[in-house]
Length: 423
Image (cartoon, rainbow, N blue to C red; front, side):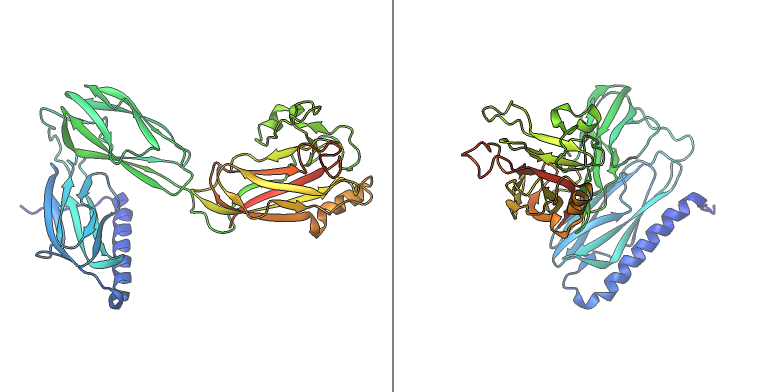
C-alpha cells in the first residue's frame, strides 16, 4: 500500500529553520576545513534514525579524534542523548520518548570536535501516534501531553495536572536552583505548580524526568526560560537623575524646605536610595542627607552624611563597572572631600575626590545651575568585580566633623546624575 505523507503548513517554518541552520553550520564547517584538527565519524555512517510513535532507544559507536560534543537542533524534550560530550572514541545512546500526538516530529544531531563543527549529521524522525492508539495499562504524563514549557524572563508559576495510574515522582535533571516544583511526588491524578524565578542572565534550560512506581518513564518535559541580552561594554545598569525629588530650593544656600531622608514621602523612599544613621555624639541619631529639587545634599554642620544606591540588580554575574556622577560643593568656605566606595562585592579604583567645583555666589540661581553644567562637575571611578548585590556609596567628608575632628565643621556636597555602566 502506498503511503502519502502530508506536511501541515504550520510545520514548514520549523522545518525550514532546521534545514537553514544545519546548512549554515555545515557551510561554516566547510569553510574552516583546513583549520580542523579533530574528526567525528559514526561507524557505518548512518544519516537518519526513524523511530516509531512508541519511542525507542538506539546506541551508536563512533570514532573521534579530540574532545567532542553532541547537540540537537532544535533542542527538544522528547529526545535524550547520553553522554553529550567526551573525549576520543566511544558510544552514545539516543532515547526517544513516546509520541502521543499524531504529528511527525524531527530533530537533527550535530557533532563538534575541539570546538569545530563536523560535516556529518544524524537526523531523527519519529512517527505520529495512530488515531485511537491506547496508552496501555499504566501511564504518567501531564494532562494534555505537553512536552515543554516556555517562560519569560520575569519568571512565574505554571499549573499542571499529573495524570498517573500509580505512585509517581518528578525529578529535575542537574537540580537547577532557579526553579522548583510543588509537589514533587504523589499518587494518581494530582495538580502541581512549576515555579520559575526571575532570570537576569541569558536563556536557560532544565529537563523534568518522570518516575512511575520508581521506574523512569521514556517521556520527559523541557523547561526553557528566556534570558536577557548578554551585557557588553557601555550597557547601563543604573541611571539616576533624582528628578523625582522635589523639596526645597535649587539655590544652594537656601535651606528652607530641604528635607532629610527620614521625612521623604513613601514614593521617594521606595526608589531604594538609603543613608546611614549618624551616631556621632550630639548628631541626633539620624541620617544627614537632604533632598532638593532633583539632587541630594550630603551632610550638615558638624555631621557628615552618606548616600547608598539600591542594589545593582541589572548586573549579570560579575562585571567591572564605570560609575559616573556629578558633584558640587555647597560653598567656597566648606571642606571639599568626597569619599566613594561600594557596599557588597567589588573594589573601587578611586576612594576620594576633591570637589573644587562650586557656585559663586551660591545664593544665585543662575550660578548654581551653571555649576552643575561645568565640566569639572563630572567625576568617575571604576568598580571591579561587581555583582547584582553591589551598592554604590558616597560620603561627604566624614561622619564626625565636629571642631578638632575634621579640617572644617562643614563638608557639604551636592550629588546628582549617577550613571553606572558596564566597563
